[in-house]
Length: 141
Image (cartoon, rainbow, N blue to C red):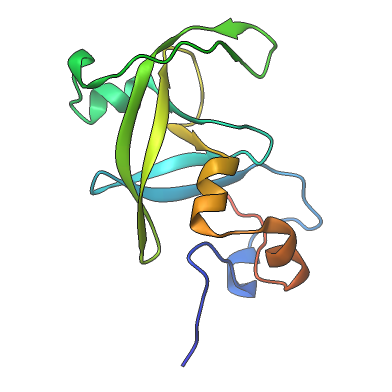
């Protein structure tokens, strides 16, 4: 019987990748019962982000949002004004948790971004996973 962490990768996942790598970690997560591809894991960020296209794609309404007043800074250093915050169910492996996403209207090749708060709630330590050989980088379809 094999016990795998909720967010882990085997050697089979490395097939087709170039090693060593410095690619972004892009995964598929179940958000509100939908498999969402192109979710970026950003260990350097302190908030989870959902881009407006995904928000609209989930048929969420403006009245579903709560106020989020802090300013955000994008990858290119520009201030991004949020549309608000929403708490949604996210599943990684067999673990389901509620996540507060900040909704922004900004361009991104990703659908959403999960960060340190999500990783800590999930109980994932990337340093541990890397040292144990449980994680490697892979691209999403």
